[in-house]
Length: 202
Image (cartoon, rainbow, N blue to C red; front, side, top):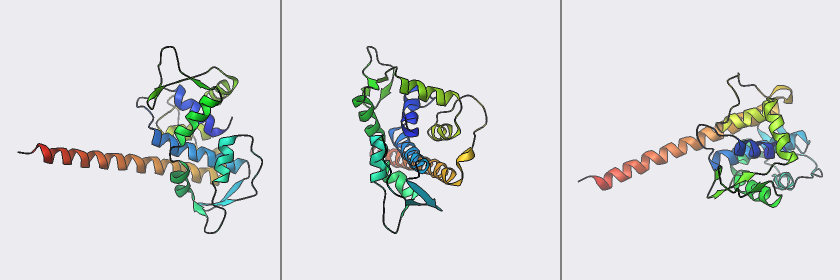
Protein backbone atom coordinates (compact mmCIF):
# COMPACT_ATOMS: atom_id res chain seq x y z
CA UNK A 1 0.00 0.00 0.00
CA UNK A 2 0.95 3.63 -0.30
CA UNK A 3 1.94 5.86 2.60
CA UNK A 4 -1.39 7.65 2.20
CA UNK A 5 -3.36 4.40 2.48
CA UNK A 6 -1.27 3.33 5.46
CA UNK A 7 -2.02 6.69 7.09
CA UNK A 8 -5.75 6.32 6.43
CA UNK A 9 -5.62 2.83 7.95
CA UNK A 10 -3.83 4.08 11.06
CA UNK A 11 -6.30 6.95 11.41
CA UNK A 12 -9.15 4.45 11.53
CA UNK A 13 -7.26 1.99 13.75
CA UNK A 14 -6.22 4.52 16.36
CA UNK A 15 -8.27 5.90 19.19
CA UNK A 16 -6.66 9.28 19.79
CA UNK A 17 -7.73 11.49 22.67
CA UNK A 18 -9.59 13.64 20.19
CA UNK A 19 -11.23 12.34 17.05
CA UNK A 20 -9.40 13.05 13.80
CA UNK A 21 -11.14 15.72 11.76
CA UNK A 22 -11.72 14.98 8.09
CA UNK A 23 -10.05 18.27 7.15
CA UNK A 24 -6.91 17.47 9.14
CA UNK A 25 -6.77 13.96 7.74
CA UNK A 26 -7.32 15.20 4.19
CA UNK A 27 -4.38 17.60 4.45
CA UNK A 28 -2.13 14.89 5.85
CA UNK A 29 -3.24 12.44 3.15
CA UNK A 30 -2.34 15.01 0.48
CA UNK A 31 1.10 15.30 2.07
CA UNK A 32 1.47 11.53 2.14
CA UNK A 33 0.59 11.33 -1.55
CA UNK A 34 3.21 13.95 -2.37
CA UNK A 35 5.82 11.99 -0.42
CA UNK A 36 4.85 8.84 -2.34
CA UNK A 37 5.21 10.77 -5.61
CA UNK A 38 8.65 11.99 -4.50
CA UNK A 39 9.69 8.42 -3.76
CA UNK A 40 8.36 7.28 -7.14
CA UNK A 41 10.44 10.08 -8.75
CA UNK A 42 7.25 11.47 -10.27
CA UNK A 43 8.04 14.88 -8.77
CA UNK A 44 10.91 16.82 -7.26
CA UNK A 45 10.94 19.94 -5.11
CA UNK A 46 12.67 23.18 -5.99
CA UNK A 47 12.50 24.84 -2.60
CA UNK A 48 8.80 24.48 -1.89
CA UNK A 49 7.75 24.32 -5.55
CA UNK A 50 6.52 20.97 -6.88
CA UNK A 51 8.33 20.22 -10.14
CA UNK A 52 6.67 17.30 -11.97
CA UNK A 53 8.74 14.71 -13.76
CA UNK A 54 7.72 12.07 -16.30
CA UNK A 55 4.46 10.49 -15.21
CA UNK A 56 5.31 6.94 -14.12
CA UNK A 57 3.01 3.94 -14.32
CA UNK A 58 1.45 3.79 -10.86
CA UNK A 59 -0.50 0.73 -9.78
CA UNK A 60 -2.53 2.68 -7.22
CA UNK A 61 -5.47 4.59 -8.67
CA UNK A 62 -5.57 7.25 -5.94
CA UNK A 63 -1.87 7.94 -6.33
CA UNK A 64 -2.36 7.97 -10.09
CA UNK A 65 -5.10 10.56 -9.63
CA UNK A 66 -2.70 12.62 -7.52
CA UNK A 67 -0.05 12.46 -10.25
CA UNK A 68 -2.60 13.49 -12.86
CA UNK A 69 -3.60 16.47 -10.69
CA UNK A 70 -0.09 17.97 -10.66
CA UNK A 71 0.40 21.42 -12.17
CA UNK A 72 2.73 20.68 -15.10
CA UNK A 73 3.44 24.16 -16.37
CA UNK A 74 5.30 27.15 -14.95
CA UNK A 75 4.63 28.63 -12.46
CA UNK A 76 4.66 25.38 -10.56
CA UNK A 77 2.56 24.87 -7.45
CA UNK A 78 3.76 25.48 -3.91
CA UNK A 79 3.57 22.52 -1.52
CA UNK A 80 1.11 24.36 0.73
CA UNK A 81 -1.18 25.16 -2.20
CA UNK A 82 -1.08 21.51 -3.25
CA UNK A 83 -2.12 20.39 0.24
CA UNK A 84 -5.19 22.62 0.24
CA UNK A 85 -6.19 21.88 -3.37
CA UNK A 86 -5.56 18.14 -3.46
CA UNK A 87 -6.67 17.74 0.15
CA UNK A 88 -10.19 19.00 -0.49
CA UNK A 89 -12.50 16.11 0.55
CA UNK A 90 -9.59 13.66 0.14
CA UNK A 91 -10.43 11.67 3.28
CA UNK A 92 -13.89 11.01 1.88
CA UNK A 93 -12.34 9.85 -1.41
CA UNK A 94 -10.14 7.40 0.50
CA UNK A 95 -13.13 6.10 2.41
CA UNK A 96 -14.99 5.44 -0.85
CA UNK A 97 -11.92 3.72 -2.35
CA UNK A 98 -11.45 1.55 0.75
CA UNK A 99 -15.10 0.51 0.60
CA UNK A 100 -14.87 -0.30 -3.11
CA UNK A 101 -11.72 -2.36 -2.53
CA UNK A 102 -13.31 -4.30 0.33
CA UNK A 103 -11.00 -2.79 2.95
CA UNK A 104 -13.84 -1.15 4.90
CA UNK A 105 -17.17 -2.65 5.86
CA UNK A 106 -20.10 -1.82 8.06
CA UNK A 107 -19.60 -3.59 11.39
CA UNK A 108 -22.19 -5.67 13.20
CA UNK A 109 -21.78 -3.30 16.10
CA UNK A 110 -20.00 -0.10 15.11
CA UNK A 111 -17.06 1.22 17.08
CA UNK A 112 -15.48 3.62 14.61
CA UNK A 113 -17.48 6.63 13.58
CA UNK A 114 -16.02 8.26 10.48
CA UNK A 115 -18.26 10.97 9.20
CA UNK A 116 -21.92 10.03 9.25
CA UNK A 117 -21.31 6.31 8.66
CA UNK A 118 -19.94 3.74 11.04
CA UNK A 119 -17.26 1.71 9.32
CA UNK A 120 -14.55 -0.67 10.39
CA UNK A 121 -11.44 -2.02 8.71
CA UNK A 122 -11.54 -5.52 7.31
CA UNK A 123 -8.69 -7.81 8.38
CA UNK A 124 -6.58 -7.92 5.20
CA UNK A 125 -2.87 -8.25 4.38
CA UNK A 126 -2.87 -4.51 3.51
CA UNK A 127 -4.18 -3.67 6.97
CA UNK A 128 -1.58 -5.86 8.63
CA UNK A 129 1.22 -4.27 6.58
CA UNK A 130 0.09 -0.81 7.66
CA UNK A 131 -0.02 -1.96 11.29
CA UNK A 132 3.46 -3.43 10.96
CA UNK A 133 4.84 -0.20 9.52
CA UNK A 134 3.23 1.72 12.38
CA UNK A 135 4.58 -0.65 15.04
CA UNK A 136 8.06 -0.35 13.55
CA UNK A 137 7.91 3.42 14.16
CA UNK A 138 8.46 4.29 10.50
CA UNK A 139 9.37 7.99 10.86
CA UNK A 140 7.50 9.53 7.93
CA UNK A 141 4.26 7.70 8.71
CA UNK A 142 4.72 8.65 12.35
CA UNK A 143 5.22 12.32 11.50
CA UNK A 144 2.15 12.43 9.26
CA UNK A 145 0.06 10.78 11.97
CA UNK A 146 1.44 13.09 14.68
CA UNK A 147 0.35 16.09 12.61
CA UNK A 148 -3.27 14.99 13.08
CA UNK A 149 -2.92 14.08 16.74
CA UNK A 150 -2.07 10.37 16.54
CA UNK A 151 1.10 9.33 18.34
CA UNK A 152 2.48 5.95 19.22
CA UNK A 153 3.98 5.78 22.70
CA UNK A 154 5.80 8.57 24.47
CA UNK A 155 9.09 8.44 22.57
CA UNK A 156 10.65 11.47 20.90
CA UNK A 157 9.27 12.53 17.55
CA UNK A 158 11.53 11.49 14.70
CA UNK A 159 12.36 13.60 11.69
CA UNK A 160 12.24 12.59 8.05
CA UNK A 161 15.45 10.58 8.40
CA UNK A 162 17.09 9.38 5.21
CA UNK A 163 14.31 10.65 2.97
CA UNK A 164 15.97 14.02 2.89
CA UNK A 165 15.13 17.68 2.63
CA UNK A 166 12.18 17.35 0.25
CA UNK A 167 10.27 15.06 2.60
CA UNK A 168 11.10 17.34 5.53
CA UNK A 169 9.65 20.27 3.55
CA UNK A 170 6.42 18.36 2.93
CA UNK A 171 6.09 17.31 6.57
CA UNK A 172 6.61 20.89 7.75
CA UNK A 173 3.97 22.11 5.29
CA UNK A 174 1.48 19.50 6.54
CA UNK A 175 2.01 20.64 10.13
CA UNK A 176 1.59 24.29 9.15
CA UNK A 177 -1.58 23.58 7.17
CA UNK A 178 -3.17 21.57 9.99
CA UNK A 179 -2.36 24.35 12.47
CA UNK A 180 -3.82 26.92 10.07
CA UNK A 181 -7.00 24.87 9.77
CA UNK A 182 -7.28 24.68 13.56
CA UNK A 183 -6.80 28.44 13.80
CA UNK A 184 -9.67 28.93 11.32
CA UNK A 185 -11.87 26.63 13.41
CA UNK A 186 -11.09 28.54 16.59
CA UNK A 187 -11.73 31.89 14.91
CA UNK A 188 -15.08 30.69 13.59
CA UNK A 189 -16.00 29.33 17.02
CA UNK A 190 -15.23 32.68 18.62
CA UNK A 191 -17.20 34.53 15.94
CA UNK A 192 -20.17 32.19 16.32
CA UNK A 193 -20.12 32.57 20.09
CA UNK A 194 -19.98 36.34 19.79
CA UNK A 195 -22.85 36.31 17.29
CA UNK A 196 -24.95 34.10 19.58
CA UNK A 197 -24.28 36.43 22.51
CA UNK A 198 -25.50 39.41 20.48
CA UNK A 199 -28.82 37.65 19.86
CA UNK A 200 -29.14 36.67 23.52
CA UNK A 201 -28.39 40.18 24.79
CA UNK A 202 -31.43 42.05 26.18
